[in-house]
Length: 507
Image (cartoon, rainbow, N blue to C red; front, side, top):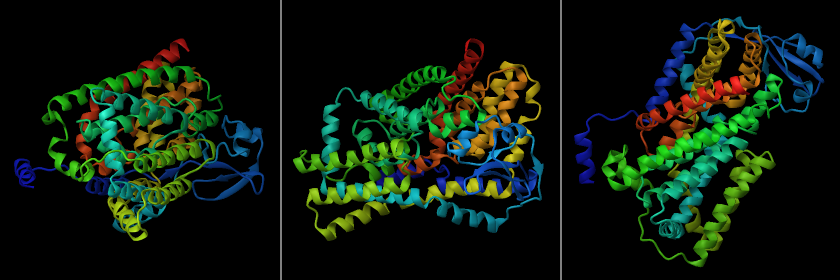
């Protein structure tokens, strides 16, 4: 404690917390609703009850038109009718050329506060998942099984700790490129941060391995239904168009990211003072390093840990094959937690006390998830997102095709800051962007590549994405995380531009 006080005195300035960063963003978003004119595009969606298209005008007025391919062609939506009818595209599609200004929707201080409340309501499923996961970890920690497992893993990787970085980044990137693994990674941090600390790395190495693995997987999406597939369907092209270029980009990005992390990780192992989060080491160690001595890996410990890992396998299988979301994912860990408690022979009273104690440790993380969502809700309520899109695309259709592609990627980076849902960004922007590719003589699959590259880059650092939530979970200052990542994002941006230009010239 004395050493920690010395650290605080040496460093009088402190980085803003995730809470303060979020509140500042909320206030900026509210101010923007007074500066940027409100506006909206008309949207179209298939109504299964009436078997017709429902068109919603910017004014909110709804009308119905026949659900035919001719109707889609009439409105300039180059999407197959079947994709809308069978639910492949399940969100309203923006109608090109339909933007209109609407009455201002200024957001005041009361709206800011209510957006926080509504953000928590909208993310309650994610928050509950995080709490249940914390409960499972609580009983594993109490029993000593988690400590024993970390000790065994540390001994097995001794001298080859870099395998943790390579394996984690590779495996999670596969999840990102195939099914958009992102929110699911939150379950990994409480489990893996202690493992990386035991390997004499810092928490930043763990964060970057997991989060950037997910990010580059989504950035070079191959069959991710929430980005590449829905965007391709909305643009009216086959999602396999350009897939080999994205595969090549994923391999290149993996090499860049792994080398970047390992170079930093080796510096930290040799000299802990080189860690960017060295000043936070006491807080991180208090949160993640185990208080008890590592015990031998007893049979019941091994079985309990296998059950815990099996929960992750079941969760991933359900998400990929059974269309599960956080409700089902949470149920898996509830059942897993009970089974683990039985295996470890914990008395009923002890089980619930430790489960609740573990859950309470992640309450702050759960709350920041709701706070982060509130920024997007405020922008939606202010109805300025479509205006930002309209302003960004003005004039790009007359550009040189190659310059157009590069600018398009940066436009998606900007839009991705305000709209961090990949599917929402796709159905809003792709119907408007895809015809611009036609105008400059480029195939539409290049718009898809520009979209996923731009969104992937901004997702790595946007405080409206999981980046801020992740930093809060692992006790790493968000500003330090961004500072560490900026050179890497520069390299990935260059890679994205190169891949776009190669695909345009050779594809």
